[in-house]
Image (cartoon, rainbow, N blue to C red; front, side, top):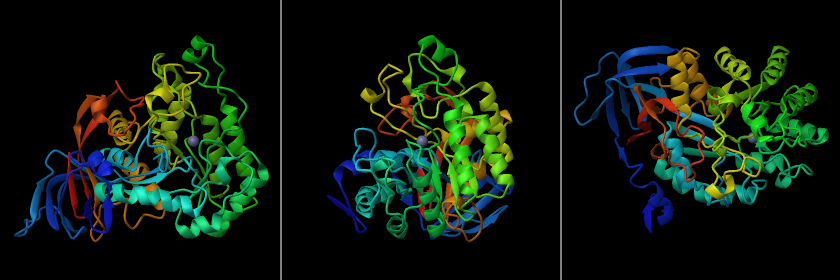
Length: 452
Ligand SMILES: [Zn+2]
């Protein structure tokens, strides 16, 4: 066993991360000649001085002080480190899919500095005891990768949709939100109880909007028709969002967030509720931005995810809403599964694709193609989710006197994604075989410099 600080590193977690996430701890460094992106705009060339993990200066030119390390940023772009508010870290209890070490390593290699983990674990994160159990594992990996991991608590006990979870105890412990992600909350009174808890605790309610019973696997489209499997209708999602927004009107201080929006119809409901002044927000995944139901390859069950990929016109609407601000931010819904859980059969395969390593690269490609602005990329990848989770003092911006949390990318590089680009324990990525922009060169988290 090896001891770093107060954390005892178990050899397994150490081995998973070591070698791929070696870092230098530099108490004083200067990044030279880098392009800087923030939500305020693009600075084409500047130097950035960081001392004791904090940004000391950003200037056109900084003379590197004696004893400080100099890092060349020439040809590269520095972007605020990502914050991913929907990740299935599978901790505790599902080490066949993902571990704390591989999950946070995948985030690090994707330019993501903080993740919010979903509670559909074994056991479900519905008590303070399970929160503690999860953090014992996560703290070790967070220490090595520098990536912060936060928890959600479930809305209902054991995700069963029957009895409420102990909201106040969970909030007091420090969960960042409540969600039954994976299943929608069907019962009106349970949703009312969740909104009441949101008013009391200030925490958002994250809805996996899906009325059950539709039996669908893929959205209506060529592959769904070819396989002759039932279609997953838009109404399963849009009807639940409509119901939720109606109930939300009774709780004006509650915060309601729609996870992984897939359809134009849902966007219209969210836009209307926002116009009425309700506290409604929503997110989109990189895979719903990148693919439509017409892109599904028949031998690849990584394309089975919940909600499903929808029509090209839905994808167009999602991209437009992301740029225009109807969609608040991007979340990966990183959902690792071992090979046997995915299999080659769309009907029996588990839902989900991984996404931590490719999220920023998808967004960079959209910027080059012209459907997303650089400023908006920073907002949806970092600034807005940081604000949403109450992490804005640590994440979301690169500016003088702030803590350093940034990713260095080569925007001019691109490659076809292979398993060598994936660091998650599971390889069920629908992006394998896609050409994406960007090489993630390094991460800066406080006084740490991870070069890849
Ligand atoms: Zn979900």
